[in-house]
Amino acid sequence: MAKSVVAGLDRILTMELVRVTERAAVAAARLRGRGDEKAADQVAVDAMRQELNRLAINGTVVIGEGERDEAPMLYIGEEVGSGGPDVDIALDPLEGTTICAKNLPNALAVIAIAEKGSLLFAPDVYMDKIAVGPGYPEGVIDIDASPADNIASVAKAKGVPVEEITACILDRPRHSKLIEAVRETGAAIRLIGDGDVAGVIHTTDPEETGIDIYLGTGGAPEGVLAAAALRCTGGQMLGRLMLDTPEKVARAATMGITDPKKVYRVEEMARGDVLFAATGVTDGNMLAGVKFGRDSITTHTIVLRSSSKTVREIKARHQDLEKF
Ligand code: VTB
Ligand code: MG
Ligand code: MG
Image (cartoon, rainbow, N blue to C red):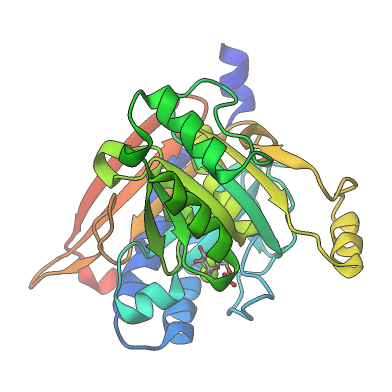
């Protein structure tokens, strides 16, 4: 037992991590509903970097802001922290820039910290994903099975008719066939505009969120972040990188990915001891958004740790507003 504690991350970091996502969320929330995604993203990145550099870690960003949307970077390979244990960091200072710009539900500031070398070094491509929360038998979902079979399998395991299952899917033209196939089963779909990290995490608490299963393709970095969360809460997720051109296969190979068709399980995307934190930017199904009061700012954060499987929800009232 003691050994795993020594080998694991410092538990003090769990609480320290909260400040990192709180800061990023507050910064982004100030620009909610302004129609300016880039500006909201930039302030979230700057706030997260500043706070990360106060953490007593020797951190390397391994999942950062990607080239795909040319976001202002906390770039892959960037070193952060004020010195301490060597850790790898996956982050998305504003997951759901469009959601934030439109002030729609479920924009988050997200981070995961893991022991060095234990997060999948995923290129910024799409990942095909399927996920369910805890409590299901191993193998209840299969990324190679049809959507209808997966929905039927989940309904059976949950002991409810298919009509009582809700799937979360990103609203994208590329998902039109998937959406049709799920609707044909009689299951309900919650279509989301963005934010599949939240979408996957929502499967871990269906009674609160109303979502049983997540299906479809989204960002691979977001896939690793979601997997880091599921490592801590329990639940199953399968992901396969969409390496559909020779260039992408070659790029993945330079990152150590030798089997381009590999299906990754949660433990293969996030190994070892993992800490995860997410703060709501806009109001969501699981986390409330940042509230600006007369004399205080309120934030709502979920903090998770894999080695203890602790799920903490922290509602904080910040009164020293100069800090923000
Ligand atoms: C998803 C979504 C993210 O990227 O991962 C998406 O959850 C995938 O890319 O919030 P497309 O937008 O090209 O479909 C985001 O929208 C942005 O990170
Ligand atoms: Mg981002
Ligand atoms: Mg994102």
